Image (cartoon, rainbow, N blue to C red; front, side, top):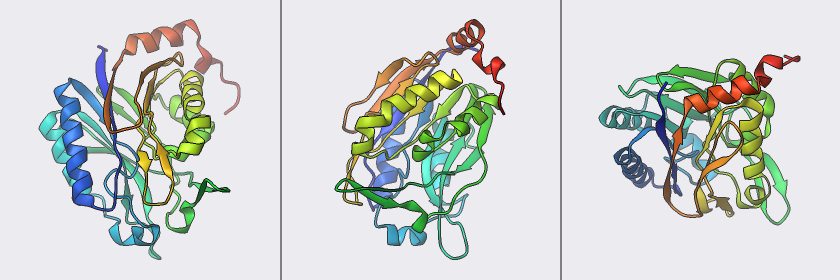
Length: 269
């Protein structure tokens, strides 16, 4: 399989869905103009506002946001991971946080609902209870594509290595981690966790993040990254809006897996 370029979109989403979608489309088009065959948007890229409003803005899939993403993938002829959107979920109102993968012909080829919800209280820094407004997903998702098998995950999932090992054992060579990772936890753990997931699973890790102040009263970290299967950071964003590109080399991945066949030595399942 030949090398190709992947791009991450780092942006800051707010409560105006139309503005967010226009910004995301502009940045995806910029990535495509630079030669990207795969583009990954961040978590909740299409809407981010008061948690009490989440159930009201959640959409069905297919729906307006995913149809917009499908058209964009088809128009530009690329694979597009639509970071995550709020998907209509349980009857009593909790939404799923859902990542969607579109093929270059616009088909929705995979949908993953975030399994691990961010219920955290860091005094003076971050207080979040995602489970108050969102429902847990239940199923890991890896999808075969023309550019490799893509394993989907979202943000807080990053702290649960068993999910990524499951994806690797299903053949994932690319792991996507669209995020809205907070600044306090990002400074401490973002890069070490991303590198660990890449090293453990000998896979490329593509992690686009939101940045700056958000509607929930704290800051997101930015610093989107692409990590190679050896654990090297091969592309790193700053703290603002950015399209970050890197070359994905399937032969480099295959060589690492041949020379150090850790995945063939697994003793626990």
